[in-house]
Image 1: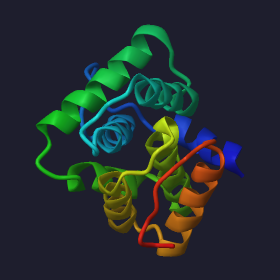
Image 2: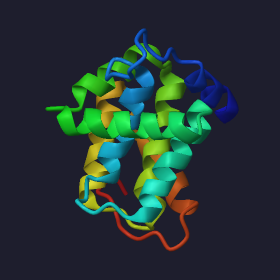
Image 3: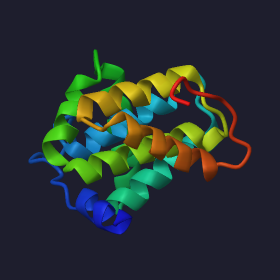
Length: 159
């Protein structure tokens, strides 16, 4: 099933223009992943690498195209006043299973450094609420990501 979701994400339209923008679902996803990576105020190399790996795997991009997508997500996040601009794009373009899978990807970025910070937890919670992912699905995705991140520390009010 996860491969089917990844396939769906890969097939999302890239937007009409040559320059990626926040209405492009790939840029919206990149911006949200970038946002959660920076939620705790510290961007570690391991988080940046996982962020780029997720973009590469999810959208089948590499090289300059990967760098452009990462930069577009960073730029969009830095210019945004809230998360709604991105979550509304994903909610329009992703079905329920793909939205759940996206929350799982967010948790992978969160746990890339082996720690869960309350601001990261809150960010994923807000995004999940905005894109219509149920609490139990968000918690299950967090548990899976935590289990795959050896030495993960931190707790959440969900437990």
